[in-house]
Amino acid sequence: MVISLLSMLALAAAGTSAISIPGTASSNSQSPGLSVRDSFHGRNTGNLNKGCQNGPTSRQCWGEYDINTNYYKTIFYTNRTVEYWLTLEEIDCAPDGYQRKCLTANGTMPGPAITANWGDDVVVHVTNNIATNGSAIHWHGLRQLNNNAMDGVPGVTQCPIAPGTSMTYKFHADQYGTSWYHSHFSLQYSNGLYGPLIINGPATADYDEDLGAVFITDWDHPTADEHWATISNFNITFNGSDTGLINGMNTGNCTASNSTKLDRNCVSNGKKFELLFEAGKKYRLRVLNVATEDWVQFSIDNHTLTVMANDFVPIVPYQTSSVLIGMGQRYDVIVEANAPPGDYWLRSNFEQFCMPNAAGPNNITAIVRYNNDSTAMPTSSSVNGAVLGLNFCVDEQPTNLEPWVPVDLDMSKVKAGIQTQQIGPEWVDNGTYLRWSINHGSYMWVDWTNPALGGVLSGNLSAIPVKDNVFQVGANSSSTPSQSNETEWVVLVIEDKTPFTGISHPLHLHGHDFLILATGYEQWTGTTYGWQFTNPPRRDTAQMPANGFMAIAWPLDNPGVWALHCHVAWHSSQGLGASVVESSALIPGKVGGDWACTLNPVCDTWNAWAPTMPYQQSDSGI
Image (tube, rainbow, N blue to C red; front, side, top):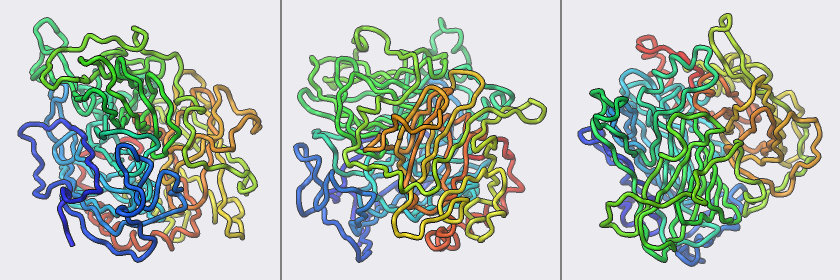
């Protein structure tokens, strides 16, 4: 049975705004998501109409489940499939008034929201209409339990989707919260190819309305590909972004007095993104940093933030005036409209200490209004009347990021002992090019025609290209697998061996939330003294301090080939990544069917088109 999304009482609106480029509507005849159908699994069905109902004063409820349900152990099904269509295109856009080429999903930046309920099945049909390149869509932060083939990383889990062809992604929403989908093909997301991924579920604090995603990104007037030609050549530091965008919008300056804007590409002065508050209400904002190279400090003048989730992990709520967000990270915050009615700046200041930036720390803004008729520019001031700024690059304090559902680590379950990896620069071709290495001096440079997952499924790990930078854990790795039914864990210490200071790395692991046992601002001494084993912070993207270390842990319960990489896009393109092969002996039984049915045809069409590709691979590929 197919019903309209509008009739789904349980499916809350995502509320995400995007900039729509006039005259550049998608050529896709399908709406981005207008189909919901029954899908009967016959197992562990959850009924959202029974039990405690989710509402403004009962956000911890979710039908027969609630905020205390451990979704790592309790997988349930709503018996409903939500279906979407995305068309990937290159268009002309001017999000800040300066026209350039952009990559979009369905003609908007950000793309349309992929929205589901906790327990739904999701089907997304992706058509690549980018004429000159392949693509693939990654569902950032999704666990993809036993579903590695749908992770969307070209050269790791699939071949790219060739121009003019399509691929269908299918996954189960066994987590809930805020994330994003984005291209994982080279630097495409830095050119605009991303959108919100919202999975509705319970929350640790009450609110009245969900205003949806607030995307924050840096933005350049040259494309990321044009920048790459310079950055790939022995470049460690960056000149900084031209500006930044909030939900695809910001203002520029095309006036005659601004000589830097006097060219034919400056077509307007742009527009600020706006939110409307009603006095007395509490609003949920889903704040995402999808930048290429910039950390941001998010705040709203004269308002307090109640933080209730980091990445896909609900946390014990805490209050703050601002939150520091690294690339790939998300925070769900509640803002109470309790300030005197007026107009206020919403700020996403670029953190100068993390990455020197030409845009300055205080001009990436949106507007919060209490009166929809107001057109005035805010005159409000930031926290303590000063420009926000820190002098170090870290995540929020670990004591603030306490997961609501506790997960502890028993070191007796770490059978292979503590493993280590090092990050550092490598110069290749007689010092001509900079590469970032991980996995003891190796850097990642995938082969789009030969994904690592295919090599694992063939049963011949030696067939995986060396530059996929494989790091094995679990069964069939260098460690001895346990013979018991108890889930083993891996503990990994990652150290920054960079011989210069000040470059931090937001590290993202696919396929898992990981425990953050420790971070340090110096090299690891080899001891676990001071590590947090009882309910430490847990997320899928975390900040490793410059010249320091980070110790993380995750359970070996999701066989697959999972990318581990830095979310500074330049670093990822320069090779800072690895293919984590988890429990390779179990992978064929979990994902082999998906490869045969879905991914073999994708590889066939890609391999037929690739020899004619006008732009050959010039970076890591991810």
